[in-house]
Length: 352
Image (cartoon, rainbow, N blue to C red; front, side, top):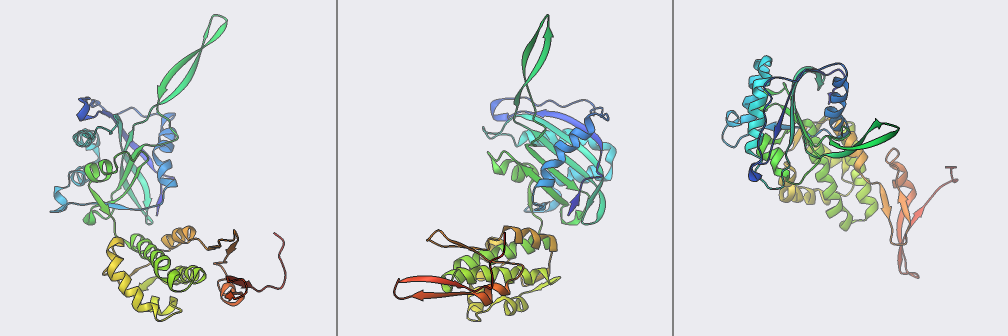
């Protein structure tokens, strides 16, 4: 997890990058921008807001031959080795971004390169490099007194409430390619920022593995458990899966399957489905890993615990007390109506 509350912007370089395919130019500032107490809080909110609101999916620099051939990895290493080089390296970074700006949909914009200190990640305080890009312009009005009237002046600028593109490169886990967070609000060319400019892969730590394995379980529940049994069992399987992750620090697949599979006949089905679909989630050969509690919480929030019926009735199952669904909800078949039914037992109706 990251904490940017105490992060400090030590340096800011601002450049402008155009689109090469449209013969737009690149503009590199000769010197860093002079920061002041008025602009810094606004910039921190502009740069960091999207990262606070976004799910933390980490990346790392990568290269098919060797990490040392990744230009952005080398730029980051140069800066972390000598932080005073940040402005000179910011020009190299902007030039690199310009060279990737060939797609006709890519918009020109300002590039901000910052050196950050006092950034917390995984309970470690480290330095970081921030690279941000503003692309979309917003119309706004200024007013000017002219004689006895107010005149409207239409101007164009950047909306500080929304960052278009950005990444944070943490001086952490260098051997793996540094730990990186990235945002891209304008996904008109998804490969441009992540693949062409940054050249990153997903960072396969415990957070990544926990989320991917539980996402796979969701697919298995939907595609195998539901057709084989019913919607209630699909929901309850995922509830048991999440609870297993929540109460353990280490994942071990055999223990997991013995704990969550009410129907033992589905264990071979699970293993077969994993062999077939596991590569999609990068878990095909994974049988054990450390569990990230924060990731379990994120996945739990995304799981639907509602049974939707075609008679426009919903049954919401309680994940906090799952034994209630097991004890007090039964499914059956009515011969006379030729319809399924759920029978729900209770003592009294609670006030909402």
